[in-house]
Image 1: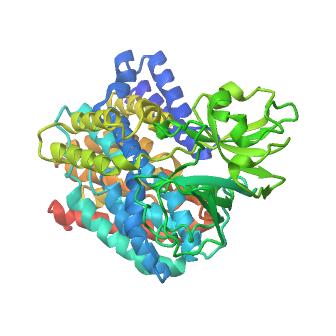
Image 2: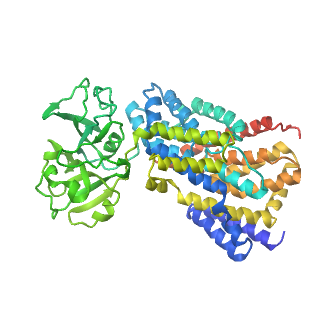
Length: 592
């Protein structure tokens, strides 16, 4: 191995140290590596940029958009409504999370699945009286295990497949190639999770602070053609809302106060609530609830997915002071509709449209996306806070699931390649209105994409300089040619790396080594590549090892030690099960 190989190894080691330190973002480290490799001439410009056009990476981008379509159409809300319900014990609550989330994560990227489920599970935990610390780790672990069910379950699988195609020139893996290993591992892993997690997890009070805790007066309406018409207040779930209280119903000029649970809802009913910001955000996600506007104030409800919730405090110089909310005509003046108002941290009594505005009043507005940038320095407002809450397009929820099924069917039957099926699915999500172009753009995690794309340059450098072969020889010498032991060492190496750097980077760095190793041994590379995919995904021991672990860290009120205590045994257990299943599926004799 010449100096270029040693330089590539040193650069890879430096990248590992920088990423594991936590002081530098992984995408910045890997982009820096790409620049160094290209400028030094170790890889050509085409090789340095090859990751950005890799089919695996483009498939990841497309699947982010498909997941956005499921989320913004209310597809996951549909799932939550039908499956979670009211469990009696912690274990039964965990079962209701683990089974649908693991299955869903097999066909959507598991990261957006968890992102979508966190607020739903958090609100549900309050409703059923179970600490979120008992539910958030099972949510993450179930999504991780579910991501191993198919090739599209996690970006890591797609990236490894893309690099495998690039390095071997072969056709790569099909959508269900990993299922023979991933399915039994997921079943055993989820079963172990449900058996041991209820007692192992801490029971802590809710640590999450959601938005502002000031109490708003909120007025919404029952949609004339929505599913709530004819239901009682209790049946509609409006008595079970946390931190939100139904004060009165305004109907045909009369007011129903002390609203009983048996009261039947009618189309056009105006519902007056008292509650805080996050509770209001949850309420507006209910299918059949729309912003309440008066006859002389046009609605913003058309294309509501393009609207967002904004908090705005009125300044002493505001032109609307002294006017009622109805007379202020926010729709014409600012392109916004007032949903709620808070004054001095307390709700304001009376009909929303008749409240007279005073300096310091905090208004909750439904506004166009440009409202924040346009009004931020307006003298009428002291403070503007974009809550970035968008209302689902519930009428397209079933359509979004249909598009996903079409995508999976076309790819699994071989009618279209996985890349083309994912691209078609993403296009259909946008064209059908399941998500907007803006929502699709926001769904793409740019740092993740940059990390993946830049990692390919590092992989190419290790491969062509002989560094990968050098490391492979060291592992072979350690395993003494024992195939099953080699599979275990590969799994162990990727698992350790995944805990200290990103799972995608760990997989891309190890794959060239694995291919060099299998070439030297004269054995098929598929079981080893599957081991890389599984090890890079099955990261439970730290919140840093997998993105979904970090996402649930705050909402669950966890400490770092919580993950270590329950995650290390999970890592070891799932690793041993995976290697055993790979040996059985691929007929690896333990004696060889």
